[in-house]
Length: 340
Ligand SMILES: Nc1nc2c(ncn2[C@@H]2O[C@H](COP(=O)(O)OP(=O)(O)OP(=O)(O)O)[C@@H](O)[C@H]2O)c(=O)[nH]1
Ligand SMILES: [Mg+2]
Image (cartoon, rainbow, N blue to C red; front, side):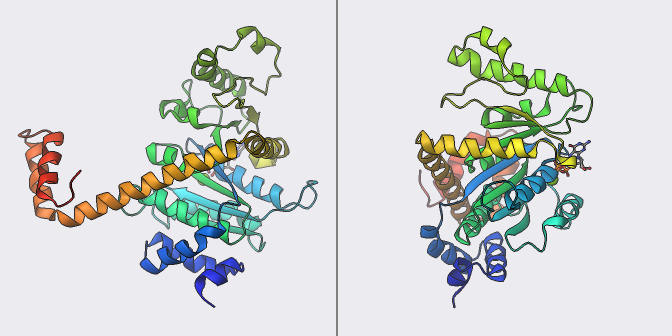
């Protein structure tokens, strides 16, 4: 049996092998993904992002347990987890910590966990993450949780690869919510205030709400009076698509608020499907994916044509302020065979 068939039939070892190939961006790995692509598109991709230490891994662990629970009144769903760690190497503390936190999920054949670290060039991580999500999707994992630290553009890109994006905040990160600086609130479908057992929850919620109001309500001309009659935990601010990014509180460490959160995640999927926006998201998602591939591929191809010495020389010219980066790129492009 080939690797594709083995993955399709749900063999864990085959999936693990394929994922390694995807991470290393090998030709055979790409070929298997090509073969599997027609079998993808079934999973609900859920991005979980937010500032470091807000409890994302703990939350992902709890959500996975919930989706695996036979007692939640719904079908048990197979859950894939991708923990993307943009900073630390594979053996890093954060990932080791995640392993410990997710220990209670191991041994369940309906859960597959993979941690990934940054490698390769521009777009490499997002590309690999997409590939891993596709592999899990083809292998029959119905819910795929993708955890990223919301610290920069690459995390935002990864979040865009999801159907539903959770932005996780926690009290005590300072008056200014860190994620706001990264513009990450704009990509939130659901806002989670985790660590709701800590003091300052009200402040965090107020800060989030006022930022949402600035971002969404004024734009869409919502009637401000409506804000006063609303349940504290639910925001009525609608984005352009008509979805209201709710604010949900949780205490992931104690498993509190998880049922409510899972419920809203499911509602978001239903909402997307009944309003045709699932297709719209798929369109946007695949567009982002194609863009990432193109960026990655063009950059790699171009770099292969430009000898390191020439690149370094050009960089030196920029360092000495002889030429601007823009002029430098123009010159380098003229020297290479790739024309734009
Ligand atoms: N008080 C409290 N602590 C929590 C809660 N949820 C998680 N924690 C703790 O917060 C710490 C960080 O949790 P993680 O789940 O690793 O957070 P993370 O966002 O995944 O962290 P990074 O991946 O490193 O950004 C751990 O010590 C958790 O036990 C909660 O609801 N309340
Ligand atoms: Mg984590």
